[in-house]
Length: 338
Image (cartoon, rainbow, N blue to C red; front, side, top):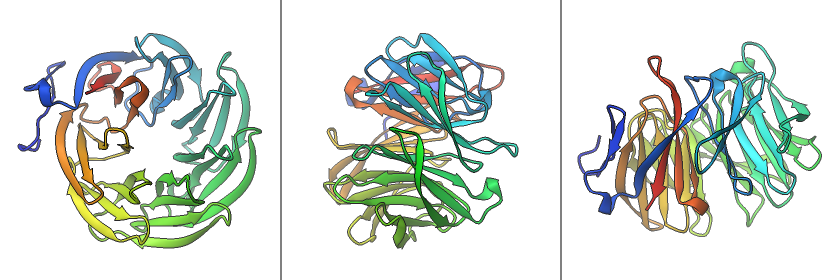
């Protein structure tokens, strides 16, 4: 833990704060997650019906919980490993990237949000994992292939979520591609190419890579977040750094320290000007003073093997996955956002 930060300690089954007046994240409660999974990936959120969708990978399910009380609503069998989840309120549909695994192909599972019945399965390569959503045309870009599929490239499959039809593919060289961020004011998409330690810039209309920006200040880039008005990218790297990059030029502006561990989720909150970086065992909270200046506000200890989280600014809540350890329970840690 960094001595210059204020921490909420997750010890002996309790969380306490030395000074709640300055805490940006304040522990509230735990939600139990059925299935006892030792590994989680990304969350989905349905604000209209008050549901939080958790992705316990090793349980091969998606678990629907009441987002306010944590009451278990439904277990949704996936078959493979759930990785990323999108909910479309207008259609009341759940979209799940199913990585397959153990030689099984991946898929995008489209599920009815009312009955939880499967509506359609879109076949993909093994290791369907991260995705990015374009609310303008309602297309989803799903990463699949790469190392687990024994390929030296990853495919970003473009799927129209209205119909569930594939409409295009983008081949990205390298066997590991992670998170992506889509600009709303342009047709650019920024993709973390972990295999090459670059940020690849893709034109979504042309479906091709138009630039590849190398990372020299840090290594193993996984999560990504975008501050579009200030033209800044935040790139979480597993060597213990967050790189701030100029989206006009691809220039690295600085590398800021984050808690050492396997970071897997990052989000920028434009209203509060904060960046939340989830790593194994902790969440780092940075304040954006301006586009070029950042201050570490807080480090919150969580679960030693948890590394995914979801900010829900509409509820002032931050949900952190807490996988099962040593025969214990799988949980979601719930923090209030001050």
